[in-house]
Image (cartoon, rainbow, N blue to C red; front, side, top):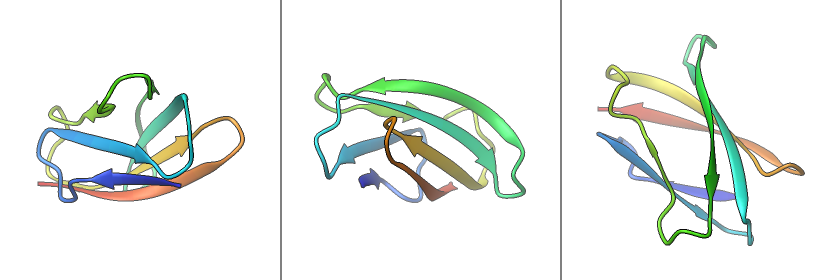
Length: 78
C-alpha cells in the first residue's frame, strides 16, 4: 500500500502512499525481530521520510500502519 525508496537506503527512506493517507505510524525492527524504534509521519508534507542514518548497515523490517491497514517492508541499510 506504500512505496518506499530508495532501497538500499543510506540516510532517509521516503514513502509514497498508493492510497490516499494522511497519517502513518511505523515501527523498525532488526531482521531478527528486535524492536529498534517507532514514530509517526504526516502525508501533509510533500515528501514524508524516515531518518535511518543512525542505523548500522544491515537488513531491517519496517512495519507501516495507517490505522486500518498494515504492511511490512524489508529494507537494506547500506
